[in-house]
Each structure stands twice: as structure tokens, then as C-alpha cells.
Image (cartoon, rainbow, N blue to C red):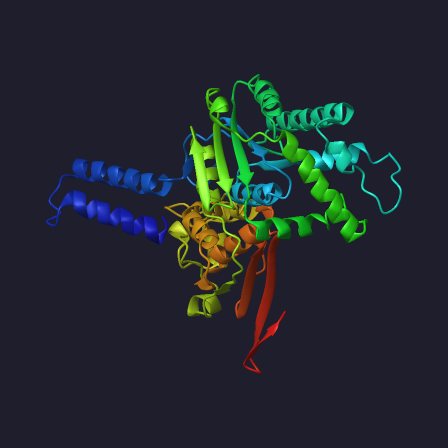
Length: 436
């Protein structure tokens, strides 16, 4: 019996027997059994926990194994809005956040499918695959093709959800009531699928000009003269504006759930939001901002436990303050299981998994997205990995294996296209930090 279990056993035994030790042998045997049962129940407490993104478990102890399953409804997020209104920015941020929370999330971009469908058109050099005339609402042939591509993209999304995905994001303008009704009709054929419309509206001219400038380096215009490309894109927006229909009271009668983000969250309108996933999406989007800022993050100073190789801090359950060598010797099976799946593994005796920590620091991520000032965070290795993984969009399987050495400071700078990451390493001899 381990030191932890023996002490727990003795404490329970003393409580049950009383201080005078005058109980009968039968009572002592019964007490011993109860104490052993209590210690095992403590070890197994929180051992198997069903979490919507996945299963968190530790192997130690007997008992029924949890079943991996397709728990809960699927969510289809449908973007709405004119070009250059930040839809792709929102989808990238939302996809990154939901994936970090361990929900299988994927973006299906109609523009990418449109460009792929025209890849064999042999467009002349210095031109775009689809000029502004392709987006004219009076161009019936192009209009039918655009509708077909949008629905084909939606079918790919639905097929992906059926194969195990959790949240699919339909990234397109979807700027007419007719298009949105077609989308709803198609999704409603799937009984377990929920729909959330997110409309991005931007009236800030400075933000619009920045968004247009970013579009010029995008796949539609990257080979064109900048002035010619900007002129074509402005005409494209004008064509979309001719047919644009914002979500209004008429569609509310269809009992849809939607959110309008105005000027990147400065004003938010939410209607009929139902379900946990939709609520998570809206709450996250309400905290976004475009202010330039720096997030500095580093590990704590080197401690005695670091030198000795002891683990702890973020709860390691019964293995608290042990070295990995001790864990391998005392709990070889636990050591092996953890090594095979560090992301979901939880140490027995109320230990934490990486997934536990992800959900524990979720409010921190929301606060970092909300705040507009610079900040310095000093934390432990696990938390550092998880925060860096969020901002750098690291695949979940790689999070527990990220190299985050001591004496290193990371600088994160959120941008419209992602996050810039700089690393500064301390040189002990020079007593200075150098960019790594």
C-alpha cells in the first residue's frame, strides 16, 4: 500500500475506532474494510468524467469504463455579411477558440471552393478568376453558379459533421433571405443539427479600408496590380450591396437563432440563442477587439522541485511531489498510460489533466481577448503551453509536448490575420535577453 493510501487508511481507521482503541475484533475488521473502501473511492473519485469535447480518465482502480460517444447536438454556424466586413477574421478566431476547447471544428469557405472550381479556366496572368461582374445580382448565369457552389460547400460541411465533426462554420456572404432559407431547409433535414447565424456588420470606414487592403493580398487578387485590384473589389462590394438583405424580424418568425456583431463587437444583438455551444460562441465573440496590444508570458523562476525533477503545482493527485522516475517505479501502469495520452490523462486522486486545465483557464482566455492593455503573465509550464497553444493555434495532440524552457519570455501580438509570436531568451553570462 502506498504512503498516501496507508495514511488515509490509518486516519479513517482512527476516526472509526475512536481514541481508546476498545472496539471488538469484528468491529475492527469492519472498520478496516470501510477505511479501505473509502481510500479506494477517494482514489477513484473524479476518475472517469464525461466532458462534451472528450473523455478524461485515469486507469487506476476498477469500475465501469466510460464510453466514447457522439454526445450532444451538432452546430452549423452560418456567416452573413458583405465582403470586407470581417467574416473570415471572425471564423478564424471562433474556430481557433472552439478547437482549443477540444471541439472538432472546421471552416468551410465558399470562396475557396469557387476558386477551386475555376482552376482550369486558364485565366490570363495578372487577372482574377472572377471579376466584379461575376457577382452582379442581374447576372443570372453567375448567380446560379454562386448558389450551386454555396450549397455544395454546405453539403461538404454536413457530410463532415456526420463523420464525427462537432461544429461546422459556413464562411460565405449568405447575404439574401432566399440563400439563408435554402441553407435552413437543407440543415433542417438533419434532426440533430442546430443552426446559428452570425452577421458581421461594419460601418467604421477605417476598419473597412484596412479590410480592403488585406483583401488585395488574398487569393482573388494576389497577382493583380494593386490599384486595379482595389477598383475591382470596390465594384464587387457594390454588386453585393444591390441584393444585400440583413437579418430582420421577418426571419425571426422562422424561430432562428442569430447574432449581429456590429463593428467587431462594439454592439451585439442576439436573438433566440439556445444551447450551450451557441452560448459559448456568442459570449466569446462579445469579447473580441482589434486594439494592438502585447501579451508577455513566461514560466516562473527555477525552483528546488525543478532541479530535483519533482512534479506538482497543477494537481498531480497521488503523484504530487514525486519524480517521474518514482511514478514509473510505484505506478508503472499509470506512467505508461499517461505517456500514451498526456492530453486527456488525469492522475488518480483528484489529479488534473490538460483538458481540465484548459477549461479552468477558459475565463483567462476570454479576459485576454477582452482587454486592451499590455500584460505580463508568470505561470507554470502546463498553463504556459495551453495559452501559447491557443494563440498559436497548435494542434491539440501537440499541446502537452510543446517545448517551453525556463528563462524564456514569449511576446504575443494579436493581429487580424493571426498572432505574431516573438521569443526572448535570457543569457546568464551576459545577464541580458536576446531574441531567439
